[in-house]
Length: 386
Image: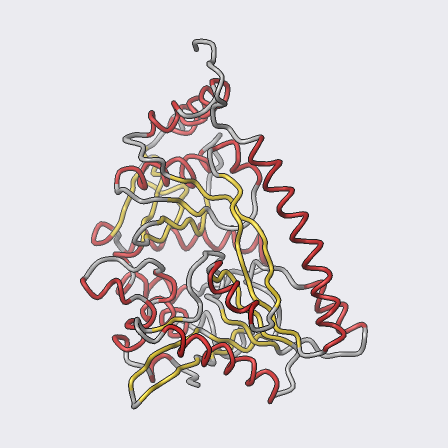
């Protein structure tokens, strides 16, 4: 176990986290790379005083790292997006101490990816060692629970086979069906939805300025300065205070620019709104939005439609637009299952959680079925001409 990623060589961590990027390409999951997680740590976004204390797990054979996991000791349930506040209240009302708990996760990041990061060829050995090691750490320290959030479905099913609780929740994702353009995507929608999206794009783009897509070297310090203002405003309204520090964005400028797409709205020489996305090998991940001026539909344009434009242009298979938000459905982002694993130390409480999750799973499955039926895509029957 390591308390700093500075003690693990980036190439050793990334050999487990993103072996597919060894050829110089993008990682599937940019959030579990050494550079992203270390930026959180170096910037003080995680660490002392944040409620996210790093306890990185590592499995080795003959001095070679075969598996790693971004493990944190948590003093609260904020910044997780798989909500267990009610569990904490119930546990403490019964006389228990829910915090600290253990969390294998990417802080502040509701994006699905591998959480038990195994070097190719060592998957079975490393997976078992990491998961069992995390449970053992919780048991030895008499902690209430361990949570593995936004893991893959395969990880969730493997964890359930050895006795952890498998939780299913949902998000809204846009899927690229091989579209050649945004217009081709619009053609797949019902006539009414197609007209609505076109109207929203016109309204947004009439805000009196220009919208820029920026990545890599095109991102300059002034863009981060403007985006920090946007991020502070949104963070203060949503969470009380921003999760990321200003230093994170300074480090991002040095080490993460190639992983980031900034969509910036500029009017009269000043940036008035922006959205931050992170670019994966097959997906674009929408993360943050903010503004200093409010314009009709500009949020939809910057966060959803520009993301679709970028995904189509770069051949990405999907756009993950973050947590919650049924308003995404009408804009082509469909309900999609997300997965997590949970170990609860107390047997009685564990049984109660199992019953709760069984009922929640049924409700989520029903919601996804109903919401999918209300999606914006054309049905089989012909439509009238627009």
